Length: 385
Image (cartoon, rainbow, N blue to C red):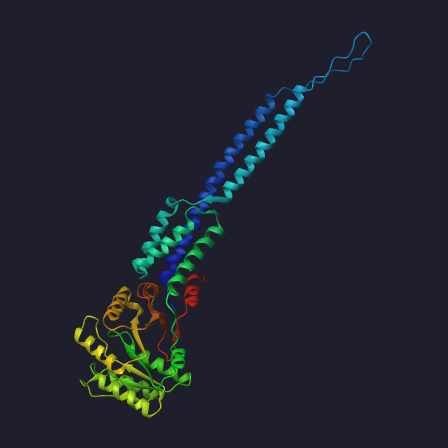
């Protein structure tokens, strides 16, 4: 899969820039400090040469008439003390030198250009402005003022900050597992309505959910409440036949809410666990079709409302989600065509800005290519080598 490649590249570029600049600074500072150390050592050597040396006098036999002169030790003691001080200064200088090479306190101006580049790359990867600012602010707060080792520690610090920010965004909303929700509520039939704009893969997604329910020993019936689009009922009929799942249809141009009502009554009489209601794909600016969707929701009284979004729509998907939330309301998102999305930023934007969980991801055309969304899985894909 090529999913999230652009977002992953943005983070890798950031790490490469940090490592590259860190290495250049280290080499530069090493060269400069070594030069300063050489000069200091030369100065110390000259000072030692200029110190007065103790002259050893030849031995002269002492007589009673010529008493031996007293020994003068003061100059020698001072020389030794100075020599000890010079050694201590050399040690301090060496310690300071190695400490400077190994550690650097990061200032905001040191990382400003790198953060600007990351901002641009995140926005290019369909990460919304608000989410981008959160990630950058978190990273800045972690780095500025930190005294870090210049190689592995800096990289680890950056990666941990990015992972923590993303995890906070993705776990902001409680995760929804449809199977768990159905069993927890213990209601028959459990009604789920699906909606979204044209072309997002809503019909295929309903078939995938039906397959998932069947695998988990839950019976279901499909309501073909899209009476607006030509061939919509035929597509659902094909999937229902293949999966051996009952389908309730209506006439083209008929009342979609009436089809949903019939499907629910059929489920009750046949003791079916779940009703899956398809609706007409509609542009979020189409007031008439949105009003029709409101009517379906009012009559069907769904237990779960799922908005289906196309990950390839980028930030337009975010605008769609905002509109549907304001006009209809929904409980969770299923994001389709993730396997073809090289950016991946829309997942972060949806989770952070809408306070709605991304429940499942569509990663292919097969019935079993609908996977539960997991924050850990997402983070691993972003930071895998």
